[in-house]
Image (cartoon, rainbow, N blue to C red; front, side):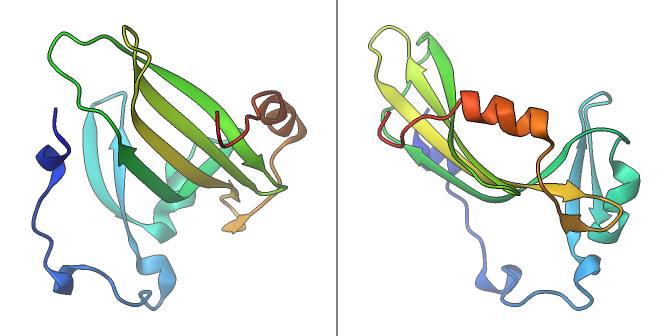
Length: 142
């Protein structure tokens, strides 16, 4: 797989330059894993899409970088660790590495916030989630 496999033209006029007003009219692409379907929805519909009692998170930033090319037949594994934990924000990283050479082939860092779907605001992570994330803390250089 080559990073150029992910190149595609994206006209500037299709990239939002300012937030939509009203903001809850922003579009969401929703994946239903149970039925393997995708649907276009709106942000104001988010509370009805979430399971009650679950911890809800939204990715607010995702950075992907590719370091090494993979070839057919390569075996890979993923390492995950938490880079930072704040009251309402969590940063974590996935590293995809070649199990034979140990080379890191790709990294993906996420910044997520914990959501209160009814209030439509960020909220503190539940204590049990914060405790588990603290156990998984790593240094950025790992």
